[in-house]
Amino acid sequence: MSETDVALVIVAGALSGAGASLITLVYNSSQERRDRHREHFSRALEAVARYEEFPYVVRRRKAGDPEGERVRISTDLREVQADLSYHCTWLLTESCQVAEAYGALVTEVRAIAGRLIHDGWTAPPIRDDAEMNIPDVAPELAKLQPLKEHYLVEVTDHLSVWPRSLRRLARWKPRRKADR
Image (cartoon, rainbow, N blue to C red; front, side, top):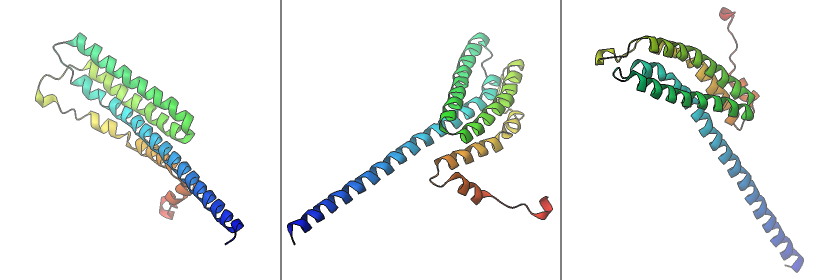
């Protein structure tokens, strides 16, 4: 082997090593970004779930300290409201589709859970174990499930390595004649 051949082998080896390192760096960076987003998207949904708990919290408040309970619950509620607003804003910077789905979910959870929270404040606090089950709340909150599912679909589309159009095409189901 001549000196030129050796030099070419060394340069080719260095370039392939550098190329492999660059590809690994780009992949890892992309994966880390996706993981950060996944974590943030899940925290956004967690904020919705925390807000959904307040109809129960209000109804199960301590009867012996009404003023203290009002302060405690309203402080916690204000924190969750701030989280919901933060996530709505942050999502706008990431994806219009995810932000739109989350905004619709937040609007509806505030309407449904907000009404239940209001009703809870007008009801007397629960005083015994038999009243711990609040059967009128769960069916109302269940109305949020389709909006949660839509949000999760948008999140999945956003995090996917496949283009959104291909993912939507894979989910598309033609309507049957009976459905028309």
